[in-house]
Image (tube, rainbow, N blue to C red; front, top):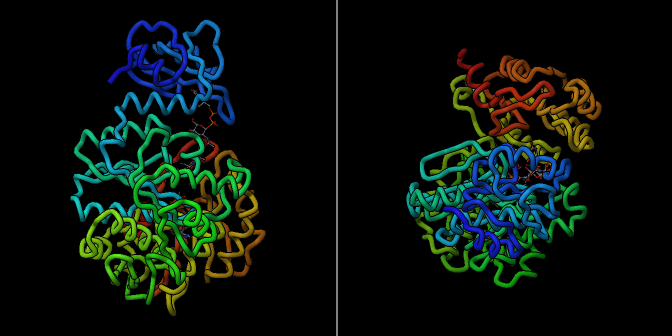
Length: 482
Ligand SMILES: CC(=O)N[C@H]1[C@@H](OP(=O)(O)OP(=O)(O)OC[C@H]2O[C@@H](n3ccc(=O)[nH]c3=O)[C@H](O)[C@@H]2O)O[C@H](CO)[C@@H](O)[C@@H]1O[C@H](C)C(=O)N[C@@H](C)C(=O)N[C@H](CCC(=O)O)C(=O)O
Ligand SMILES: Nc1ncnc2c1ncn2[C@@H]1O[C@H](COP(=O)(O)OP(=O)(O)OP(=O)(O)O)[C@@H](O)[C@H]1O
């Protein structure tokens, strides 16, 4: 689709300079401009889009959109660059969300897992070809899986993917919606048919300033959604959300929850629990996932599915048979043959690490728990010693290694983690492959090895550049000698 000058002016609500032809595409990145495209020059956190206008023009941009006039460039001056980006991207894509049923999932933790669970239920109900998923880990369109870059991509990415889904025959889409996505207008123009809120804990305050602002940002998703809305009754902010947004139902173990979790218990490699529902009585669910938090993730997704008219039978089958979520307590099959477990998990904070190690400790039973982990560079240094303390407390053997160090020195990061650790059960092996190898050599029958921090990710970001690295692949290679 392309947009003539009149349409661009209508969509942006401002005057647009004469154009040599229709606008065929829009982007916020000068490096991605195509001839006949529009470039939205965003005033970013670190650089000014205006500085990239010459490059955009060189690449064939016919329109610049910015919050201020730019000398020598055909500019439409708009009140908000990011709002304009989303408006043009949505119009160019033909408002795809209006032809789809979009399920939004938000919250600090559990978004990706809940999104995968909901996607599994939708696939069981409507068929794989009719379902799509956009998460931190993957973008799935029918049977096509692609590794994702952002949780919620920039508006042109979100809209292009929704359009691709619509054009490919998809009808039901789960859209993991981060607070960055909402705050930075990446999902403006997207119509949500249903919304799920998992929980809210301290995070991303660099962007939102206060917890109150962080909460209000997430709440917008519920303000936009016309259809079923479900929130976590066991979470302070989730309970508040249900009280503030009319028509919001709740899930959780709390007595008053509309979808109530009861009789949760471990069952071999999974968990069994009852979901007491408002419309379908008690539904017994068996899930191949461990940990209380996953029972919450499944309960939320299940509640949304039932509210959207899916049957308890489909739901029960779907969650029983669901595949592993990439990088979330993902068990590596090659280890099982050796008589121990290797679990790859995305936990990259002290809270996440504690959650995963507690579950792994239960799985290990009388066996030992080994943990390979590290802290990322370029962000939140406070958590480093805390991660060290948690790993020493819960694991028998802890190996600190390199995560995404970015521009920082991996040794210095490791030393900061070590400062909180107990040196009697912790050592540093900076090379991530060597650290994993050391843990695998040490592991014996009945032990559990947790490789934490990078989950589904396929790249390690280091000062010298990006290096391909995928924990599950590396573990498999080391175990099978390939
Ligand atoms: C903190 C944050 O969200 N930053 C976003 C912000 O970056 P920024 O303002 O620093 O951008 P900038 O580098 O100053 O550049 C300004 C503009 O110049 C453009 N540019 C830049 C260089 C160039 O050569 N040409 C060019 O046109 C950039 O595309 C950008 O539009 O605007 C950029 C584009 O508009 C985003 O890509 C970028 O996301 C960065 C990459 C990021 O890491 N975001 C993370 C924190 C994020 O969004 N995470 C959430 C998940 C959170 C969670 O749940 O854990 C997510 O949804 O993924
Ligand atoms: N409901 C939950 N409550 C608390 N912790 C959780 C919950 N679900 C998952 N976790 C922990 O957080 C980690 C990340 O889970 P998940 O990817 O589902 O969350 P997320 O919100 O999508 O986070 P991200 O956007 O960073 O991927 C898991 O590996 C697990 O350790």
